[in-house]
Length: 445
Image (cartoon, rainbow, N blue to C red; front, side):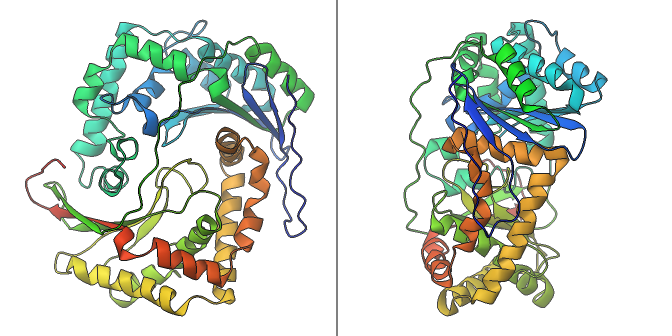
C-alpha cells in the first residue's frame, strides 16, 4: 500500500487533537483510521464521491435512488440481509445522499469490526442489480417524494426548493429528490453503469473510528478491499456558479400550508478561504441560538415569528460539502406581517454589520459557539460525526488531518475580514428570496 500518513497539526492554541492515520490502497481507496477507546464501539463509514450535484441529466434523483439500491443485496448477502446482519450483531446503520457524496455507515460493538468491513466490501464489489429490485426501489423513492414533498405542507421548503431558485448551473439547481418522470425513466442499464462508474474503490473513502487496534484494522482493510478493481472515472463536470448581480424573488404556492413562510439565501465564499471561515462566524452572530441578532430582532423585539432557522448547508454542516453553497435562513410567520417587514429587519441587521463592523469581543463569543458546535459534532453519535468529517476531508481535500486545523482557521478571522465578507457576500444583489403563499392552488416552479 502507498503510505501517505499525515501527522495531526500541533499548533499550541489547539487543545484537542483527533488521531488521524491516513493511507491509500494500491486500488485508490482512501483509508482513515482514528482510534478512540472511550467506548467499546466502532464506526465504519464508506463515502463515495458522488452526490446530487453530478447525477446524470434527465435522471434527477438518481443518486438518491441508487442509495436505496445499495441495500437490495450483493454477492454474499441477499435482499435486506445487510441490515439484518448489522442489527443482529447489536449495531445500527444508515445511508444518505448529499450534495457531493453518498455515504453508508455502521456503528457496532468493537469486536464486530471485521463483520462491517466484510459486508461493505461485499457490496462495493458487486450489487444484485435486477429489474425487480430497480422497479421496487423506484416505487419506494416515488412514495418518499409524495410523502415528504408533494403531500406535505411546506414540503421541500426551503432545503429542496431554494437551490433551484438561487443557483443557475443545472448541477446545483435541479430537483435533487427527483422528478417522478425521471425516476420512472431510469433503466437497468443506467443503474449498472452508475455502479460501475462511481462505486469503485478509487472513488471512495473508508473511515474507521472507535476502539480498535490499528494494525489489526489495517490488515482487515487489506484483506477485504485491496482486491477490488478501480474504475476509470469520468471528468468532473463544471459545477461553478457565476457571481450573482441582482436580487431574485420568487413565490411558491402551497395549498397545504396555513401560514406564509419566507426564506432568504446568499451565495457562500469558496471553501477554505478566509471569507469562508468568516461566514461561519457571521452565521453564529446572525443566526445561531437565542442570542443571535436575527432571533433577537425578529422574535424577541418584533414578534414576527416564533423561531428562525438557518445556517450553511441544510443537508449537513459547513464542512461536509465540496462546491457552491448558500447561507440560508427561513421562518413561518403570521399572515398579517408583510414579507417586506421581515426583510427590512434582515437588511437592518446586515447593514449594521457592514457599516459598523464587529469588535473582537463579539468574534470571540462567536468562536466559543462554533467551537462548541464543532466538538459536539466530533463526539456525537458514537464517533460518526468524526468519521463524517474525516471521510469528507479525504474525498475533497486529500487531507483528513485538516480536521485538526479548523479551530485555528476560525481564530485567524479578524474584524476586517468579517467586514469584507459582509460587504461582498451579504449584499442584496447576492440574495434570493423565496416566499410560500398559503391556502392557494399548488403550482409547480
